[in-house]
Length: 484
Length: 77
Image 1 (spheres, each protein chain N blue to C red):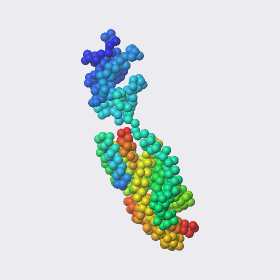
Image 2 (cartoon, rainbow over the protein chains, first blue to last red):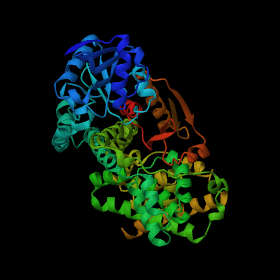
Image 3 (cartoon, chains in turn red, cyan):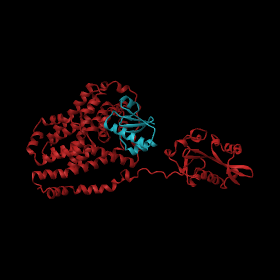
Image 4 (cartoon, rainbow over the protein chains, first blue to last red):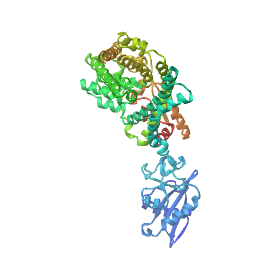
């Protein structure tokens, strides 16, 4: 038994061997080959096809009568020695396990160079089916993607530290004020400084944690899924469901129009679509948890409950008015093939990464406004006389609620940015209803969003939308001023 | 490779385009980035949450902005 380089006159016998196993013969003449010969008869063959910086091993065959004697291994050794330091690729669905035992591993798709993919075994030929596994040896180990820790796993040990720091914020802020700045806590300046030193880190920490948690949960939800839940759900239950789903579904106001079209085109009733569109920005999930952390569950529940109430009513009224014909005609005419949600395909680290990204985006964007708001709050806390605030924004002033709405509508801010102002106002005796109305007007009836929606809604529907939502907000304001 | 960024032109869409560009360049891909900003064109691709990204006509991202690293993983696959 000898292993020797293939000569030209071996080709006919090699082709017979390959043809008997139905292996492809394409471009065989362009390869370097080795044969196993016994008593003048060829009983095995392997070939090496150079492809740029790598080589393709192919056309490995051993006659059935000579299998099980290590011939394949000896042929491979000859070819591998010739390949030298070049990485070796091999496409096979028959000898996979054997090759893995020889130290080959599965190649990832991006590890297969273009020159290898251009060879006849990949590009065409009867057996070059795309699903055949590709093995490789001589590449550096598969580079690992970013590890779990780098993708946000470090947050898990960081959480207890967060709680510890949060717990010690107030004593630390007071110590800073009295020991470092040498201010008395009962002086005006001292109380303003202590308020800022305590509130600024507190609100930022709380916001970061809330955004992290909310964004993580939201990776499981998507407008696409909400749309499919709401499709063809007519009646008041649909409005209620739409308002509730509006709280939790992630929503970027710049996609309001595509979202609106997507909803109505799969058969979500117009009124239900509006319940969702009103509730999504107005009852902001981040604001909800911030309120919970800063003011307790009663105010948080009031905020969510009244917001859902307004969204429910607004959508229900619009549904009852049967205003479908006030949609711009193109909304129902353009081609739209609904796609399924993306969320279901994500793994845990990817979700965590999205959550960390969310914290970076949102906290990174709102912190200057938060600090400014807290500074205003600190000033009010230290200097503003309570009687004045109570006079302007208290229950007695009937005009305070519409004024709050009028001021709120043109302001464009997400709910997180409004919270410090809310905090300062409430702390100085502003009425709760007025403050709630202000917050809802800022987030729920934003001027830019209304202008964007004009693209799909005719003027009458826009007018009804604004009127109904504004009326709901006013109602909430007066209601809470009256009963609390 | 045709990378389409779908969105009406808000800040998030710009950010997604920037991340996709960085990811494609870091992989040394032969790519072309096209912004799809008209709503009928976005709807025709079945997308309702923007920003979104499609690669050679296949929708890969909907409604959020992945990091450059995760985009690179998406573009490699």
